[in-house]
Every structure is written in C-alpha cells, then in structure tokens.
Image (cartoon, rainbow, N blue to C red; front, side, top):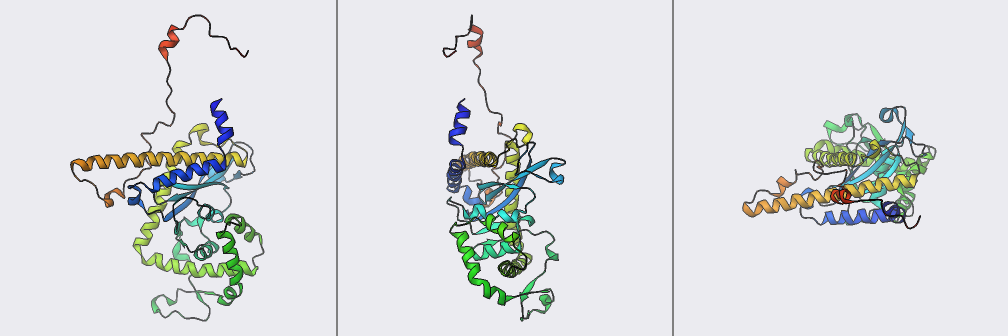
Length: 352
C-alpha cells in the first residue's frame, strides 16, 4: 500500500526529473568526475524494449522484436557518466528527430557544448541546428568515406590533393535568402517555445521543395563537410567520439541489468506510464553511478594515504558502470524467532 501511495502521489515527470537533476549535479561536483570529463560533452543513444501489451507508442521492428512490437528508451549521457535525460520514442522513427530535446531542456549544471551520436542520430538538418545553436555536433557516421563533400557554388578548392573530392555544391544564395527565417526557428528552439522533435517532425511533413527545409539542409551540408574534414584528419578527435559513445554503451548494460522485472519487457501501455518508467530507470542508474563513484573515490584516497598510487590519467580509465556487486533483488528481513514463538490465532483486523 505504501508503494502504491508513493507511486500515485510522487512519481510524475516533473518530480522524477527534479530528482534526476539533483543526482546529476551531485555527480558533477565529485572530484573523480573531473577525471572523466568537464561536463561539457555528452552523447545520446536508444535502447529498445519489447512491449507485449497494446500501446500506441509501440511499433513493429522485426530485427529487434521479432513478431512483436516495442519502444525505444532514448537517453542522454554526459562525459561524467551521469544521465541527464531520457525519453520514450517510437522505434521506427530516426533517432535524429529527438537528439536536441534533452539538451535544450537541460536544467542541470552541465554546460553541454558538444554532442556525440551514432549514425542514426545525424541528418544534415541536425548539423545545421547544432551549429546555429552554438554547439558542436560530432556523430560517428558509418561508411564516412562514402559521404559527399560540398563546396559553395562558384568557388574552387585550392588544395589539389582533395579538391576532386568536393563533388557537391551548396546554394549559398538560398541560405542568405532564408537566413532570417532560420534564425527565428533557432530562437524558438533556444527559448523553449517549441520542442526540437516537434519542429523537426513538422519539417519532415512538409514537401521537400519547401525553401526553409532546403536552406537548412544546404547549411547543414556545409557544416557536415567541415566536420568530416576534421574527423578524418584528427585521430584524437575520433578517439574522443569513440570513448564517449562507449560510455553510453556501458550505461546501457547497467540499465539492462536494472530493468530485470517482467523479463525486461514494458507492460505499461499508456505513454505517461512509459515515460515514468524510463525516468525511474534513469534515476536508479544515476544512483548506482554515484554510489560507485563515491566508493572508487574513497578507495583511491585510502590507498594514497600509504603511497600515491593513482594519477588523473589512470583514473580516466576507471568506469563507475560496474554492477556485479549490486543486489538488484533487494534485501528482505524475516523475524524467524517471532514467528516460531507465535501461538494461537493471529490478531483480528479491527476494520473487518
């Protein structure tokens, strides 16, 4: 009864997000967290779960759900291993539609200036929006060698070795003509007047010949070209992207471990209930990360009392995503002696 009462009165989107924000901020101030990152880099990725009940958010995707249906829990991970956002999205919609949502809604002390995704998280529109919002978008694009490089129409690339690779051209006149409209859109996103996923979804429903869409895509191609040139020329940049994506994958393993009830299936049919479930999972994940961080920190401090053993470079490779020591089933205490000493009938229920 107490669990049901707490669920009904306290588990809501706004209360869960406030609790998540508090844990993310706590992790942000841990000394060990600074070894993993400064809280300015993040990544996002989806994790798919089957839904055995009828739900309008569930979709068929045979590759993951066989003959059934399911949803995607999309989560945002900082470079300090904290997760500052999560959302239930249809598994058949490209991740890129939702990438900006938690970043623009972020109310934690994290100051995200660069974001990483896999191939499903990028489109040329997303490149444009990130740049106009003042952030760096750094996806790991599959088969990046097959991507087209673009130059502004009417210009030539002076470098002979790579000049022939720029096979596409950008209509800069269109960008200049629609620039004011593009700025209005970005301002609306920045000020929270419209969510990014809603705007992107609406844009996709427009005819492809719409000038605003074409202008965003043209600008996005320019930004994507700059990104690709940086990506292929810097091994350090590629490694940074890979490390951040690996942090997200490690947290997915932890989340999969924690969502053990009902064989990891989502039995909630209503979108609000599913949203609460993913928020609860994110809250619990952050709690485990903080627990591990504090104990790793305490152990290293204890060892340093005897002999300095670790430096920041060593601690960068220590992960707080381990869970073998976590008892996910809880602990139940039974008073066996009291039960054995009990005689006669149980006390009557006065309310009966």
